[in-house]
Image 1 (cartoon, rainbow, N blue to C red):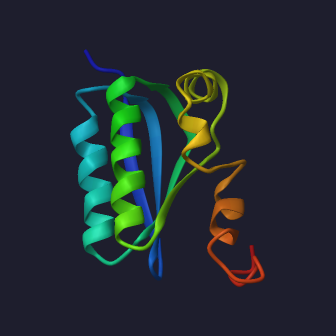
Image 2: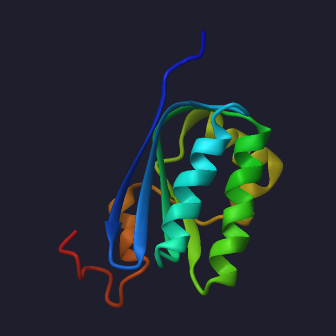
Length: 123
């Protein structure tokens, strides 16, 4: 039996916030790939991945994140992670991913990185 996993998406112009809940493992990466890919193909070139409620991430999850860092960059945008904590934070640090992917304390901070002046959404 698999641990629970859910993905939700919210859109703000050309920015998507993809929230992950539960455990991201090899069997769940296609769902993440679908959500991120749909956002990019829909013109949302700035991707914020909210991991505040992510309890596990394996190496395929990291690979998916890194793949979309490059895809977003090629589209003229970026991928940022928000709410990274605990074991995921350690994994990102140990693997060096935290040096490649911008990490913000929360979604509002990540969204402010997109906006000139930082507060155009009233966050």
